[in-house]
Amino acid sequence: MTKEQIVAKIAKEAGISKKAATASLNTFVGAVTTELKKGKRVPLVGFGTFGVRKVKARMGRNPQTGRPIKIAAAKRPVFKAGKALKDAVNRRK
Image 1 (cartoon, rainbow, N blue to C red):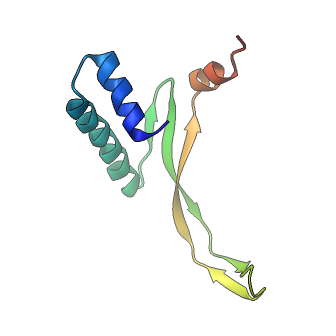
Image 2: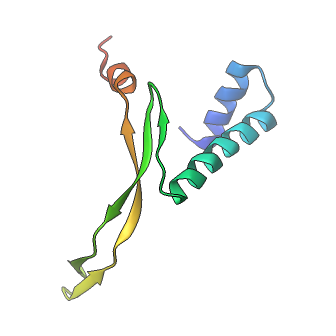
């Protein structure tokens, strides 16, 4: 599902314009991004939790040359699905 399809679905189901749905979605994404930049978690009860995980520096290998390379430490965004979302996905029809 693309962002455009999500916007169309939000607009239809909420009875609002696509412009308003786009603004809402962009605001949500911006708010989550801002909190993750601060290193905070964003829990959405019944859906899941957005968070940040620290990854240690490590040695890797260049697949073309086979030479070892150092991969720097970084912060990665992560999402952990909540129980309701897991149950909805695993529900048998």
